[in-house]
Amino acid sequence: MANVEKYELPDDLYYDPKEHLWSRIENGNVRVGLDMFGQQSAGTVAYIKLMPVGRSVRKGRAFGSLEAGKYIGPLKAPVNGEVIEHNDTVLKNPRLVNEDPYGQGWFVVIEPTDLEEDLKDRVHGGEAITEWLTNEIKEYREKGLLGEEEEED
Image (cartoon, rainbow, N blue to C red; front, side):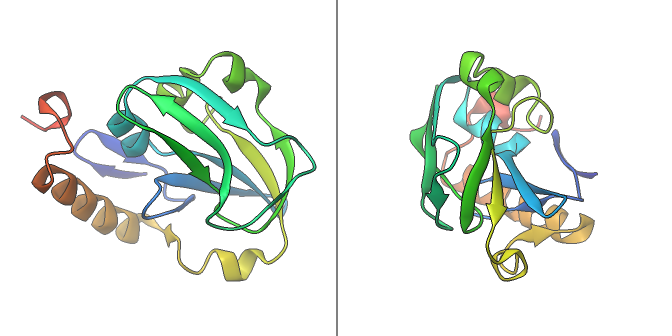
């Protein structure tokens, strides 16, 4: 587990360095959710919309959208492929993204078409995650994107 300040990011996941979405590889498929830093920066999640099962997705294109206290925008696919499952539970209770980001708060499962290629630009492994997250926190602070409650005392 990579720990930076109050943020915990499991080091077995792959992270989108811009979107703060995580990818967990499960039997060749990709389960996708929002990492702890991303969900805390966005604020309390109020609404989620997801593509239906069976739809094709392209890496970097929206598979859904999210509305939270400080963010409204697209959720971008980490890989090319097809949505084979979406989380009905998180649609009914969007706060699960905040309460359990690596468990019940996931969004979709995608069957990828070229997993190895799509994961090349993702952050993975303890040291890489720690370095990336440390820099990300610094950048967010410099831009004034972390409020008082998010800053470490």
